[in-house]
Length: 530
Ligand code: KIV
Ligand code: ZN
Image (cartoon, helix red, strand yellow):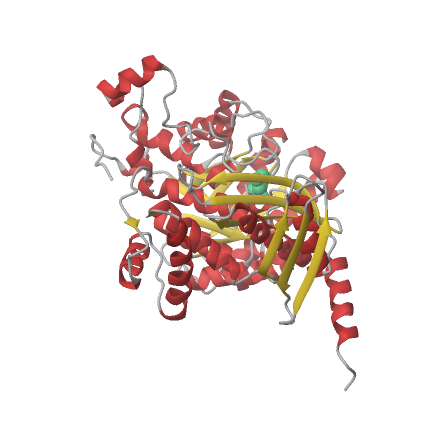
């Protein structure tokens, strides 16, 4: 990482609070399982974020277990759990994070009249009482407590100030003031912090934090305005994931601080060379593709189309580039393996990529690598990353694609047959004649698994350039009202599609009580009475 050209002052240090696994995970269709969340948390650790908001432990036993696993396994960052003001929420958050070296409880309550009247159906006095009790209880359990007055930017400022003062009296160490519905404008948001600092004695002694949503496309601009007004923690999510239009994008705010440090004097401890890999991992595991022209991590962020720009960049990169692609970890495709590469070379390459794979996992990775290397001339770092993430997800999929055949001849409708290993260990078979090969294949998979999934979205992309590139397929599937994404990687586009579909079915089934109950009943009816 390049050394900054100026002396850094401690007062310019900005803490990065990553909420990909909490606010980000609330994006529709995202349903990460425990292993995937832990994998993302490890990568956030490598990226060097200061705080990981790992989830909302009261929400479900699965959420609780994921936060607990992250708290136990991921060292370095503070691990934080979200809680409303109730004792049950706070106890669940504490129990989930308490095994971390550095636990934090984040508790919140709305301060806007819209929320107080229509959602909480209570009074301002009650909100003050709940905030006091929540922070006091959280502090009785944990030294590090954060408090947020939700919907602050639509709240009466004097009331928000009163509630914040109460949270401070009870010992909150971080005050986060969210623009929950993405309504604020940069000047307004900065002014709100200046006013709060004037109205709340002691606010300057704790860390103040920004949390902005992107409904009007200014989440990063608002976050930056808040930092300029003195806040020193920014809450953000990888690839800008989050409720509705998302949260401020981590990579954008971090690179804004990095690239323009000389102008504003603010800096973070993020290892920016891990940004591209983190973005790819999150995109892969959530199934949320990054738009090609997205700032910093979009496929075109460093591409030059016009002749004039290409000419300039060829002569001198800085003519049209304000940051070097290597700063965010792009173009580090040094690893190239081929079909003659052995187990040792693969292990070394995986280690370089941050995957510690040994024993049975190395054997599985090696087998998968050989399958790919047989079909593809060279296997690059990007390919390996895609294959290994794909293989890791396989272990959490309830269904395994055993074999399939698709007859897509032009004379008649495409016909597909599929054979799938079911959770019971048995093999399910299915076949279907459809209007197109993908429809026929997915309907055959429905028949083989006994589920009626409905395809909502289907995307194919290539992991690298070239005709022999690995295909990466993303699907969005609905099952009994539950929506879930799935991804699959393979040199064969249809195989990647099948893997993606079965993973989406796995997640949707876990989120759909109807489907799960029906499935259990079916399984039970097959089991002979003792
Ligand atoms: O947007 C919001 O207000 C939140 C709070 C829970 C901090 O996500
Ligand atoms: Zn939020």
